[in-house]
Image (tube, rainbow, N blue to C red; front, top):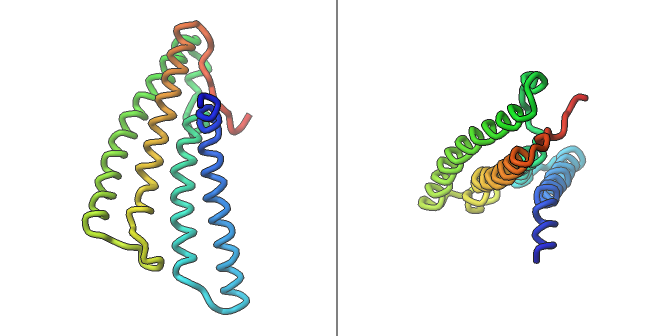
Length: 171
């Protein structure tokens, strides 16, 4: 059980991102082929690509939090001691928790309104709440990853280890 959770914890976003990326690319390729070769396009193809991209973006946000790969201005981090750096990372994560909780609350309200009125997508005619759920799912994953990041940073601070700096984009 523990090993299964470890694999899920390590690879959850990777597999979800791969699935939505494949859906996006395959659907887009089919739609381009249909449009250019057969002079015919569908409404559902464009919708699938749009909603796959939305899920892709929100799940990628959680993956970025996990790897501490999100965009940040970290010039100050080069001039402060290790302990202050750890505290700054913890403060940043706490601010992100506050924002994520607010966003989760408001996005869930949107899903509830969609459920209440039974709205459907224009082309697929599927319940819209399945696609609106991308935002609450994304922020729930972000909160999970923030909790893990805060626990990791607290352990590093207590044991005097340098904080996890994440993956740098340009170095």
